[in-house]
Length: 130
Image 1 (spheres, one colour):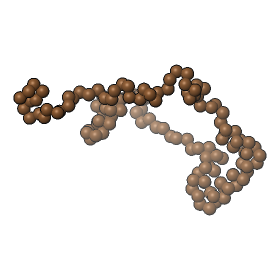
Image 2: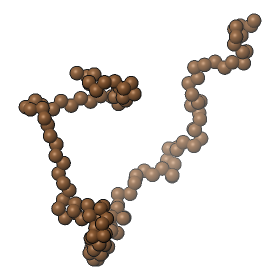
Image 3: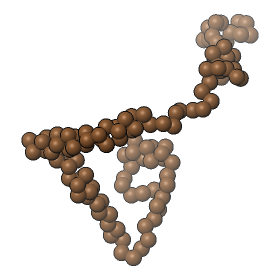
Image 4: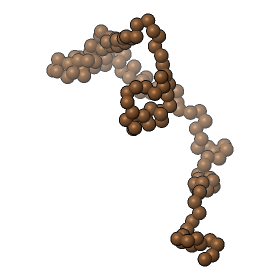
């Protein structure tokens, strides 16, 4: 038996512990310094759709949109009725209750892995951090 062969191991077995692809992979397609394709100014700051909609709404389109929304709400479209209510009366306030008496609220920030691990293991509802 040769030095590269061991009992039960084939001679053409590759070594383990590979560190992934070669660092030269992708070098040819990377951006080079001063490449004209690089967008140095970033995304445009102007909001073309917003501006176009504002112009149309100022021209009187808002009335026809409101009429259509109200017609849909009258025909039973729940989403349209909700939208009319939210736009005219405001969205309902969320009620938040603290039933701990005078004790302060304690906020615990946990790593997602720990929380997901507890869920996967189906651990009891008692928090582990207390």
